[in-house]
Length: 271
Image (cartoon, rainbow, N blue to C red; front, top):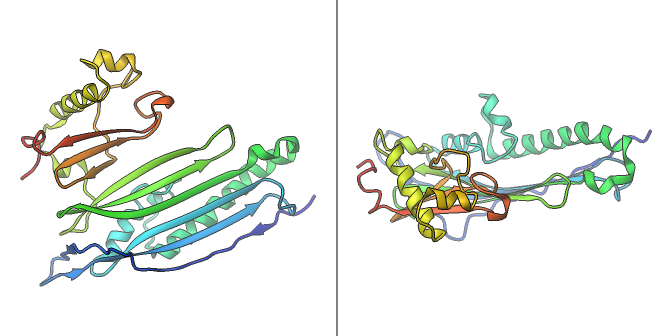
């Protein structure tokens, strides 16, 4: 039996974003320091055999990270917020730099691929292409709201089959505290039912239907309760809820975004 060959090429770079964000984070002391964002890239490929024409797993992470006051806390929070899947970092309290986290994730991901797919390929070498995998993550930061930065991760995952899947993950960081905010942080207590109604209204307008039954006819929220996604973008004048493909509708609908203006949400938003 041939030994598996791992060919890993790490290319690492750091560059300041062309338009660095001008918000500031307050760490509870006197004065604040500006926060800027750099990025690192880790790109690795593992082949299951010595023949590079055989099945392989390719992982590429382009991760944006904070530099400046409170940056360590912010980076750690973002890494543990589910922007990478599997979420290895949620089960450990070990502090890692962005570079260490990226390297650790890629190494573990490839190790699990080798373990999981290696034995399968040995038993079924006639379908080698079905054991190819790819995991790509590209991230960037938006600031459409002067109170928050929004960290965006575009994720593509292919694990064999006819096609891969693409999702967008958004996390919003408070510019004063450096904390990732949740729905409960921005809405008043008891917001749930009214917000659900506003989401239904927005979807009805989007899909040109009159009520929840009309949405069900389009497979939207069919058989599940309406809920606001915790994957959202805080804009200057609105909030956009992002539902990934297959989350609330059939795969054919793809990603669904629901944008609701702050004026409409006024009674539900914390002051």
